Length: 204
Ligand code: GAR
Image (cartoon, rainbow, N blue to C red; front, side, top):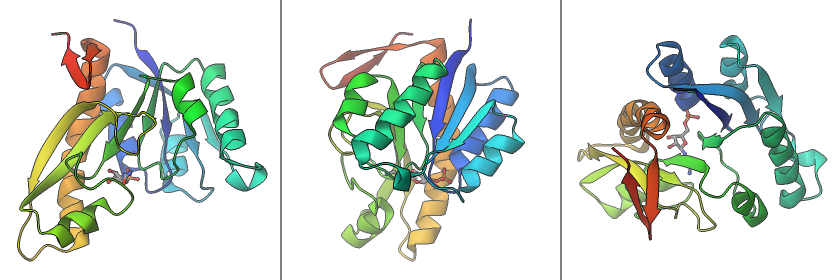
């Protein structure tokens, strides 16, 4: 099977990017990470991408664009230029414009540190703790115009302990993310899926 061309967009530490790249190197995930884009010049994700030999690594600086649409248009141009089939958001902390989502509909995936549809947004781990849930976890989902709202591809559950802090719970959620994200990408490449309503139906 041909590897699927993938771009990763990341704003921060890039640990999900790192495990995806490691999984590709080990031959466990048949995708080709051609492009990494970050909106933050100091994102560790950029260093990880360069050290792993990703062919094109770009810092696209939001300050150089007059608005979200213009910034996203520049990213879209890069994605098209590198013929990326899937766009993998890995700790990408910008909301995508609806024109970007429309242009790449069904091809953008995200990982979120809660069991969606609970606790959308940037403070998912804190919000889950504050609510007092006894389980949380992570979700890989398709991106649509609704914040953290697209069809769900995969989820993993993490038990919440009484003495958890934001950091301790996030650390255990990330351990699950590191298994779930590469495995879901591999499944997308190997099996594919259909969408019926909100439901993702895996082909095998
Ligand atoms: C991950 O926990 C991911 O689920 C979360 O940011 C972290 C990025 O970690 N994403 C979101 O909160 C998106 N709403 P990383 O930069 O080390 O991969």
